Structures are given as structure tokens and as C-alpha cells.
Image (cartoon, rainbow, N blue to C red; front, top):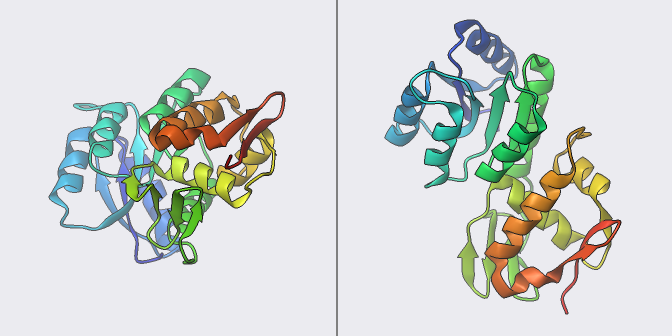
Length: 225
């Protein structure tokens, strides 16, 4: 994972340097972009194999939301959103667009690095043989999900959430437990973000979306019926 190149997108040079220095201490390579347009240029050129993007929201020329929308048209690359805003609605909006992690400024650089490492660990986790769950095939080595033989595009967070449900088949999981395991840290925002992700996953699974059952007053359970 240490050969992973991370794209840092922020219009504040001091913020970019701070993040770069902490990532460098862990052995990560970095590329910097001072605005959204430059970030898209670097990403679309593809001359550097980028493994994760740290993306600021408020930037000149092109804001973070616009950059994210463009990226999600062709890639599920992990994206951590950086923002000075702490509004709950902004976080929900970000997750709807496909954000994998959301960190409000000011933040601890050490915590930021820890979350970067947690996401990369999930992406490059131990390989396992594909397993079939009632026509839904999870391939952890390829990090893909196929429904009746057809690959389904999922964001990193959607993939991790579905994977967690599948691995705990027939077990009722509380929203708190899902947040702590899938988001990989104690999440203090609104648990409605889970409901939003579940809705999108069900839609992408088509008829098999019914396997994800809502447990009233508890959370969710994956069960093939």
C-alpha cells in the first residue's frame, strides 16, 4: 500500500504541505492540485496511478462536489472529502455523490492518515475466493460484485457495506454496529447515512435488493429467501 500515490486537492498551500508531510512520514507518494480543474486534469491524464484522492470542497474554478461528480462517472477510486463545513446535510449530500470518507476541518493530521490507511487496507485487503449469496457473487480479490453474472458498479462505501451484510448473513445488525464496522470508527453523525446507502445498494441489486431486510427498530439483515 505504501507505493500508493495520493492526490491532495486543496487551494490552501499550507494545508497541502501539512497533509503531504504527514503522509510522507508513512511512506506515501503524493501529487498536489491547487484547484478542481487541475485535479481533474491530473486524474484524467492518468500519467500517475492514483490510489486515493483527498478532495477539498470549497475551491476556485471548480468545487469539490463538481470534481467528485466527474470522477464518479468513470471511477470508483476512494475519495475522502475535506471541508470546513460541519453541517449534517452536507455530509449526507457527499455520501449520496459517492464520498467514501468525510472529514471536517480543522482535523488532526494523524487521524486523517489513519483513515487513509484504513480505506487503503479495505481496498487492498486479503484476497479470498468469490462466494455466492443467492445469485450475488462477492469477489474480494477483484473487489467486485456480480448479480446473476453481471457486474454491478458500487462505490467503495457501498461495496464495504454490502460486504459486511453478506458476511453476516442471517444476522440482524444494528445501525450502530454497521457504522462502527463499515465506517471503521465511531461515527457521530446521523445514522440516516446508512439508510441512504442501503437504498442505493438495493436499487443496484435489482430484484435481489429484497434480500436486504429492514429490521424495524434495529437496523438491517441480509437473508436469502
